[in-house]
Image (cartoon, rainbow, N blue to C red; front, side, top):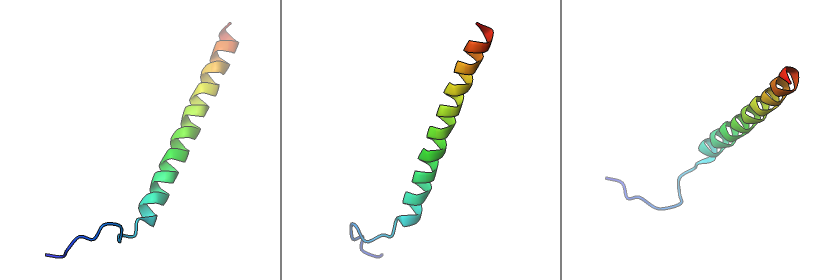
Length: 44
């Protein structure tokens, strides 16, 4: 069995995927908040 050496794995793909997920999540939350504010203004 291969020995595990901490810090030698290439994780650039995982970091890019995580960044894309966070970016998508933030944009979705902002869009939902803007939509809810719009609904509140229209129905007031």
